[in-house]
Amino acid sequence: MQSSKYLSSIVYMGLALLFFSVVGTRIHAYHWDFNAYYSASMLLLKGLVPYQFDPRQILPPEATVVTGSYVYPPITFALVKPLSLIKYSQASVLWLISQLFVMIGLFYFWEKKFIPDLKKIWAGCVLLLGYNGALFWDVASGNVTLFEQAVLWIGFYGYISNRNFLFGACVVLVSLFKLTPIVLLILLLYRPNRQKISCLIASSLVFLGLIAYQMIFYSQPWAEFVNQASQRVTEFGTLSPSIYALMGDLSRTLSESGYKVLPSSLSFTIYALSSVSIFGVSFFWIIRFKPSLLETVYLVLTSYSLLLPRIKSYQFIQVLVPTIFVLGAVKNSKSFSKFSSWFVLILLLVCFPYGENPFPKPIQLTLQVATKYIPLFTLIGVWAFLLLLIRKSRLETRSGD
Image (tube, rainbow, N blue to C red; front, top):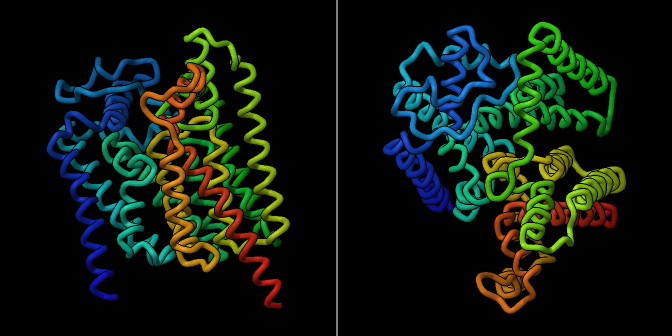
C-alpha cells in the first residue's frame, strides 16, 4: 500500500512536471493570458487604462501569442502593475515557476484536507487530465486560476472547520478578479448561526463596498471593464463549455445551416430554465437530506459551475475535487458493482455517435456541437451522482437510527 502511494505520487507529479516542461521549453507559444497581464502592467506604468489597447502594441516581440486585452476589474491594477518592473522573459518564467509551486501545494492540500484518494493513480489521472486537461489549460494560458483556487480551497477548509470569517475573506479576495465567486457566500446560509450570519453580512458589505469604490473613484475604467467583460460572455465551444454557450452554439450552428429550429430567444430560455432547475433541485436536496458541510461545498460548487454563463476551460479545476470524491464514492459503494460501472462506460461509448453517421442533418450538427461540450456533460453527470450519493448516505443514516 505504501509503495503504491509513492508510485502514484511519482506518476502524477511526473505528469505535472511534463506539463510545465512542455510549456517552459516553448513558452513563447503559450501564456496568452499572462501576456495580457504583462501588457496591462506596462500600460499602467505609462498611466494608461489597459482595457481598450491591443496588447501587441506594447508587448516585446517574443510575446507572440495574445488572445485579448486585460479583462479584470480596476481594483486588480495594483496586483499586476509590479510585473512591469521585471523583464518580460524573466517575468514569464517566474510566473510559470509560481504556477508549479502553487499546483504542488494544491495537490498536497487537497490530499490532506479533502480527498485522501488523491494518492491513487486513477485519481491522479483525473486530476491532471480531467475535463479536457483543465490544469494544463491553465498552465498553458498563464491564467490566474491556480492562484485563485489556492485561496478558494483555503476558504473551503475554513468553512468545513467552522472558521467562517476565513471562508468569507477568501471568497471576497477571489471575487476581486472574476466577481462571480461571491455567490459562494450562500454556503453561510446552511445550518446558520449568529457567527455565520455576521460573516455573510460583513463579507457582502466588504465586497459591495469595493464595487462601489471602483464605480465612484474609477468610473471610466469600471465602465470599460463592464463593456469588455460583457463581450467575453459570447465565447463558446471547448474554450468556454457552459450551458449558456451550448445553447447559443446550437442555435448559431443550426441557423447557419438553414435550420431555424432553435431561435436565440428560445436558447436563452432553455438556459434560464436549466439554471432554475439546477438551483432548485440543489436547494431542495440540501434542505431535504441535510448533507455534511463537505458534501454541501461539493454540491454548491458543482451547481455554481453549471450555472455560470461563461466558464473557461481552465475553470473546471474547481470541480476536480468533487469529481474525484464522486468517483471514489461510486467505486467504493456496494450499490455500484465493478461490472455495472464498466457496463455503463461501455454503453456510453457505444451509444454516442461520432464522425460520419446516418442521422438527419440537424441531428448530425447537434452531435457535432455536443462533442465540444463533453466537459459540461461530465460535470452534469458528477452533479447528478453527487445528488444520488447524498440521498443514499442520508437514507442509510436514518435506517441505522
